[in-house]
Length: 523
Ligand code: NAP
Image (cartoon, rainbow, N blue to C red):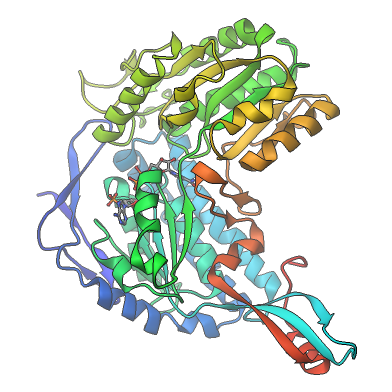
């Protein structure tokens, strides 16, 4: 019998009562579970989290950090099981599974350490006292205190482990209970993680709830002390932005959405250089890691017109060497896409890109597969397209969420900012160069369009993690199409869950009030 996934609400595991949605193993297409939230009382779930999870707020940062450390330890004890589940339920190779699962525990650990450093305080100061009148007695001071509601996290299908943990770690450290809702298609892994955490007792009662399946009327119960943090597609984001909880009741909303991330090869980079090799390696990794289903993956590759042939040749050669197939096999570097609908969406995207670009490798088909039976599973081999017109609209408009990228020529660095900006805002953009002047010009031109700019070159080639890896100490998010949200970024990530308040009054009182509070800058 198919496993029926439950939600964890009100401190209990609760089954849905109909309208089951199937979950599949992407490698075989076989159904592995089903999920439903029909009959789950979302209002009661929110009330329970708000009331019982309030205990987190009274803990110090150090105590909350200790909870995060315990959560990371509990999950790490089940690492092998979680990695195997990631392969079965998400089509991840072992490397891709580690990226997600170890990324989850790593982010929890990072915020655990931050909590330890922040110490016995429960909230933050912001800057120093400001003199407000002629007399220095009357002063102003900003502080940040935790909101008193619940953090609702709605996540995308591609990172069921990291997506859950990176949001939860920050909210918990800020002092808010979490209701997490993974995307249904890959929820199996998150469900298991929540089971482990619930059994471990690592977190105070009420700190964690889970919605497994559709969100139902969850948002109807949110108000101005609550936070809704969303990761997913722009269309869903638009629906959430228009929800009365956000528009009328002031629920805080953070959106992490689509992004056509760009990589730019500098005009100074020769094809036989280390920097060229780094550039090719980053593009190939981003196109094939998690089968390109990464919000930070490079989708547009800008190359000086004179280097188009060399870049195309190197990328085709490197991509052609990637073995695609059963992700459980050691020799396989790229697994299937996560679901049938994802595969159909990517194929449709490739067909649209072909209106303005010519395939240099791949055509949207399965290609040669290792260890896969017949036409089972949701496979697609990497697709590299080449466009002659760098301004062709589709290349900048359609985020094809799979192992697909388009190579585009540019004339000179002065037009790079404008070309990358055609993507209408992204999570990350890269410039590969060894010339400081080029790095400065292009990085500053990319910055207004990007949440993060990666400068690749020979000096960092050995150490660089590439643009695709999201690090807890750096900002994750981007303007425009990317949603305009901000996550992580070390202590600044907590601001989403805190209220900034301007205090004004007698300076010695204000000084005493903030005397033991940490500031974001110092932590
Ligand atoms: P999606 O279809 O927008 O779904 C995302 C989440 O929203 C899922 O949990 C989904 O639940 C839920 N959802 C859908 N409709 C909803 C509604 N009306 N009310 C409340 N929740 C709703 O996106 P996806 O296909 O999972 O993910 C792919 C997209 O995510 C890509 O565009 C990618 O760029 C983006 N992404 C962005 C980032 C980032 O950090 N910027 C990271 C990863 C992915 P169900 O699954 O139950 O429908």
